Length: 383
Ligand code: GLU
Image (cartoon, rainbow, N blue to C red; front, side):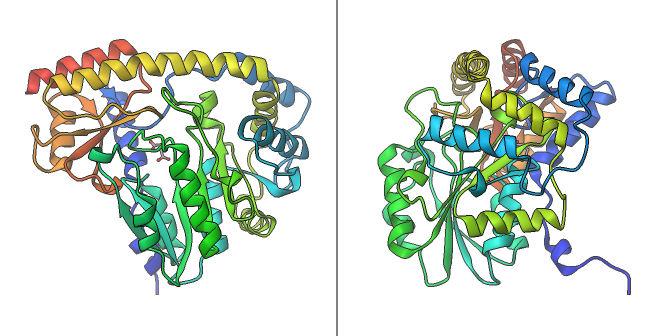
């Protein structure tokens, strides 16, 4: 009989993607909307990267790529892991994916059996628990809050480890909190993986967007157990190019590759050549990343100060380009608060519900300063 699978019926579509699509649709209808929804840099992809894509296209590099990615890009990824993260991951232990998201999706498909538990630290990115459930795993939430700056207590994580635990997901700098975990915390979590023989899934997509503190890769402490995931989108303003990558234990990487071979075959070949340039042209890449980081830093001050001044408590966090703001003053229910912001203030945000952040909404400040100022004026008007 016709009908959707139970698996798909149970799947919750991504709130970040849904709210952003709604914002884009409203804009197309001519609604004057300030979209602070998706974590999408407002900068254009840097010219040196675009030119590499144009060269690849002109040279006819338009054919299938191997499911693991083109060898040149795997070499560039391996070199990047060494140069920027200190990680020793040979090209054969890397994989190129359709955004960091596919690396994570395939990864959970590759490592989870039904009933296996994965520890996720909330508030978390909406897709981690759904990807785990889709792979028939069980997400186990460790909660953090603004009082600890959204930094988890490793002892609490240890307390939640059971015989069924397979992995711990770490995302520092984090979405949607902006928290940057101190090195000691990351070391302690990685040591738990070593002690209990677990995987660490380290999503490092925001590594370059740190305003205080430094990035640290847990793969340095648990190299045999950590899968480090990253991508082009946030660092190089390449959201639409859909290039992500991962590196780690070979059997897990092979699992990711095998799932790709039966689903997407390979990421876009032209975009892969552009990514080779983004990673290997270190000087141009650093110039772009620094420019963007300084812009986000200035915007963070405006939004954190502005929201707090409006009576919407918003911690000043150290990384990524998100803030979680307590919007109880607008409406006690965050979904309703987000709706009021959209309908009355014409400011689009993502409600905290699917991030496990009740009473909060997420503002992305990867948007221009003038727009942030205007959003604050509009919110003030409805208050
Ligand atoms: N990761 C970004 C966000 O949280 C992009 C949308 C998505 O894939 O969730 O807004």
